[in-house]
Length: 314
Image (cartoon, rainbow, N blue to C red; front, side, top):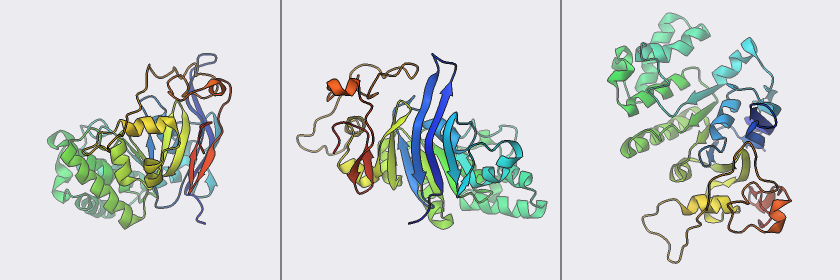
């Protein structure tokens, strides 16, 4: 069995001080294999982006461990993070906000190469090659972000992320700010780059239709915890957690299945400052019963690599 490229074990991240600290990430365990795409889905405020920042070590975990390529990187700081920065890159949601408006496209892609100490001539050639590889061409190097469309800016961000030949790219809502027609082009580009360079992706998105298209496995996050994981096709066909079923039932379908009913969730999500006792989803779950208020459900193995944290799973 191939060793995980990334391994999270019991990772915790809190913001603020007790007793009103926000439990943004609470005991998350997750693995990503080399070359694998894992989709991380959930509502806004579920902790997806915070988890992505922890993976990239842009934030420090309060507890748990993070291993990358066989090494414990949980407590690395300062210069010790340098080699890890090259191996884990990010593509953010807003391609305009993630690019310096005062820098040309060429400078934006060149920055990580310059920091790495690559000679200027090699950097110039690699910038031109990267821009060409993402479908822009070397002629874009002298342009500024405001001169580009949203899709072109995101291609620049992808080129910059690839500059140092990473093994893992954290894609945080990389297509949600783009037009539908442009989304497909960027998703196809990410798939091509994955195949060409053997990249692994942590693909964060609230759009389940997109995740179904790109991910090998999916992890469903609710109120700071992973409530279900498994192969994407299996989770879509047989979701084991009521929260997953509710998310899937909300996905628009061109041809709805006859007799299919939507699972509507009533009320607002609980506050991450004061999550419910027992199962954190119970206050909105139409299937909740008395035990859900007192028992924190452990992961239940549903077979074929699928797990769900629900007392009714299995």
